[in-house]
Amino acid sequence: MVDRDTIIANADRIVEAALVFRETATALCEAMAAKLQLPPSELVYQQQVDVGKLSEEWKFRFHGLECEFENTKTNQVLDVEVGFGNEFGVLDPYFFEKFLRSTARFDSLSKLFPNSFFDCCRALEVLEETGYLVRISIDEPIHRTGVVTRADT
Figure (cartoon, rainbow, N blue to C red):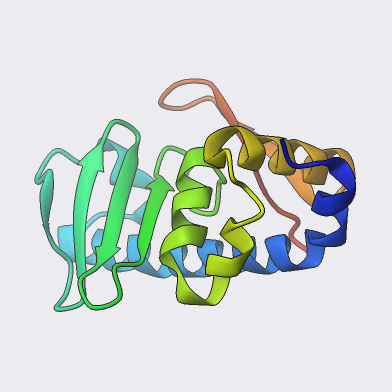
C-alpha cells in the first residue's frame, strides 16, 4: 500500500493531474452537451445515445452516472462522473488511476499506485485530509459525494 509520506511528497503532481483531468473532462462534457443540445448539467439525464463518436479524436460511452471518453489517437481515457451538475472533475479512484495510466504525461505518476484502486483511493483520502482536495455533494439525481481540486488551485 502506498504510504502517506509518498502521497504527500507527490501531492503537487497528483493535484496537477487532477486539474488536467478536470479541465479535459469539462471540455469534453461541454462538447458532448452541445452535440446533444443539452445544458451540461443535464448530461446525466440524457437518453438519446449510449455510445458513439464525439469527434474524430474522441469516442464516448455512457454508463450509469458516468461517461467514458477515449481518445482514438492517444488511447487516453477519461471516465467522467456526470451526476454532479456542472462539476466534471470529481475524482473516482478507479477512473482517476485509469486516467493517469493512459495519459503519457502522468504515466510515471500511476506507478505510485501498484494496487491501482486501493492505493489511489488512499491517495485521494490523504489529499482530502490535508486540504489538497475538497469533498462536494449533490442531491440530484441521487445523493452522492466526491472529491475535487480546490477552487483556488
